[in-house]
Amino acid sequence: MNNSIEYALQTQLNQSLRFTSSLGVNVAIHDEKHGFWSESAGFTDINATENIDNNQSFYIYSITKTFVSVCLLRLAEKGLLTLEDTVNKWLPKISFTDSVTLRRLLNHTSGVPDYTSLKEYLPAVRENPSLPWHHEKVIELTCSGKLDFEPGEGFYYSNTGYMLLYEVIEAVSKKSFAEVLKEEIFDKLDLKNTYVAHEVDTNNILTPGYCRFLNSEIKIENVIPRYHPDWCATGLIVSNVEEVVKFFDAVFSGKLLANQYLKEMQTLVDIGVRQRWYRKACYGLGIMADPESKYGIKYGHGGDGPGYNTWATHLPDFCGRKLSMAVFCNTSMIEHPYGMISDLLRVLEDENYK
Image 1: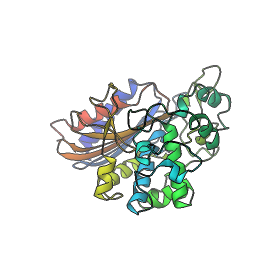
Image 2: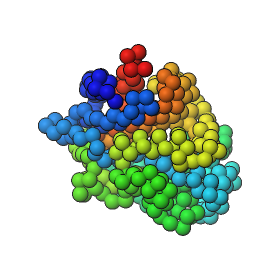
Image 3: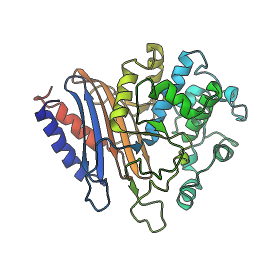
Image 4: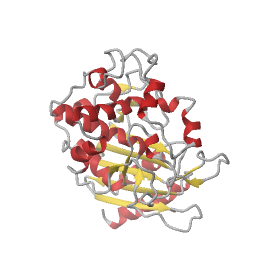
C-alpha cells in the first residue's frame, strides 16, 4: 500500500481503538487493489507502557470453526466422508437420531445443545481455568438427553456440534485433530505460526490477554498463563492476523477447496436473529455471512474467550475488488470489533483510494 493509505488506516485504527475497551489491537488487510497492510495500535501490558507488536500470536477462538469446516470439506472432497453422513456413523457412542448429520453440525441446525451455555460451564472455568473438561464429560452433559429442537427445524450456535466434528475428523483420518489440520491446511499454506494448542501457554508464546472473569475479585488480569485451551473442546488454534488473512484469501480464491465444496460452504441458513452489525445474519458451513451488507455479501467469523476478541472477514466484491481483513484484540470485550472493521473499510472505500 502507498504511504497515504497506510497513514489514513493507522490514524483511523488509533482513533477506533479509543472507542473500545481493548488495550491493544493487531490488524492485517489484503486489498486486491492496494496490496497488504499489517499494523497495530495500543499496548500489550496493563500499565500501557509497552506497545503491542503487529505479528504477535493469539488464540483465535471460534475462527477455528472456519478451519474445521475447510478441513472437513477437504476430507469430503477426497471421498472419505459426505456431508449427509450421520454423526452416529463415525461416532457410534453418540446415540442421536439419524437426522443429526455433519452438514447440520457445521451450520448449527442440528439441535445439539451447546455445552458453553450450561449453567455449570463458566463457574467450572473460573474455579479451575487450568483443568478443562474432557470430551467425555461434555458428551455426558449435552449428548445424552433431548435435542434442543428437531434437526433442520431451527438454528442455535452449538460449540458441542464442533467438538463432535473434531472427533469425526479424528475417526475418519485415524490421526489426531492437530495432525490433520496441519497436513490439510497449515502446511499447504505455509502457516508457520499457526497450530492447534493443547497446553497452557507457560512459555509466553502468546501475547498477554486480559479479562476479569477468571478470578473471584473481578480484577483485570492477564489470563493466558493459566487458561487451558482445551476448555474450548471444539479445538483451539493459535495464529496471527497475517496468517489468518492468508487463510481467508486461500479459502475464497479456491486454493483449498474445489468449487463444488466452496459453494457448499457458502450455502447459507438465516440465523433468524437481528444483529447490530449485520443487516441479514446468516451462517454457512463454518462461516458467518451477511448477504445484504452495503458492500455486497460479506463473509467472516468471530471468536471470543478469556483474554482475546477476534474477527476475520472476506468481501468478494468490495468496491469492485476482493478484500480480506483480520482484527485481533488483546482484551475480552462485550462485543466483537465490528466497529473497527467498519471504520477501516470506510477508509478504503474513500474516493481517493478506490
